Image 1 (cartoon, rainbow, N blue to C red):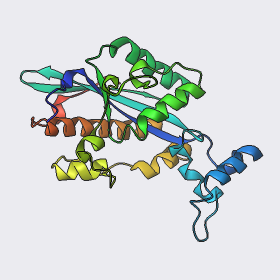
Image 2: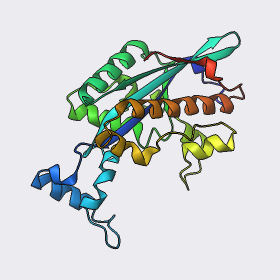
Image 3: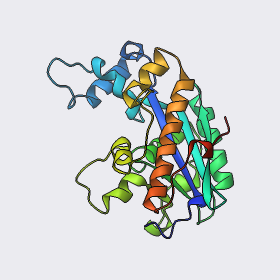
Image 4: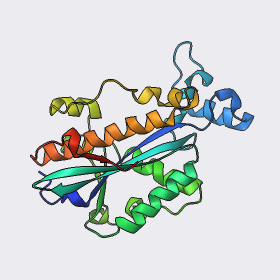
Length: 239
């Protein structure tokens, strides 16, 4: 499987996003109305649009990126090391600028690709849209506009697992469990990122959570290719 993919040419990424404001009340009247309209079909018994504002981080129009973790597999002695780096903080424009500079410098050939879990539905379009909103050129590898299907260099472990079956969503945690990949249970989950950022103000913790996800994606790619999993000593953190 993935016989045409050279893992050393794959950059694995994951993003963490939060609402642009800590609370619904901080929005202008216009943005409150826009959010309420966005949520009109999501409101259930007893709910309000303001009560659903913690979900705003999943929408690129209402959310922002606070962390992007990236990692690459480096061949070593018949196996691999995994080098990780994160771009994170309060300034989304700096995060996106640093990412795009790295991508446009080091991932420019047709042999290179980017991989994320559910990346085609979330990570890739979210990054591209937030680049546009921040006035930053979209990295070429993430910009599909005008490209032919075989020119697109975006991998998605969830799509790979589907084998063409589009009936259901398979979470990263579920797929890890299926393949016997251990994942830490001592940290936050995705639903807690917004409170970790806006209430606890702990972006360092979000970075660590994000990095654990790209390690899991790397492990999945190794499993898909029938290779040995990474050990803790194979992980190299550059920040």
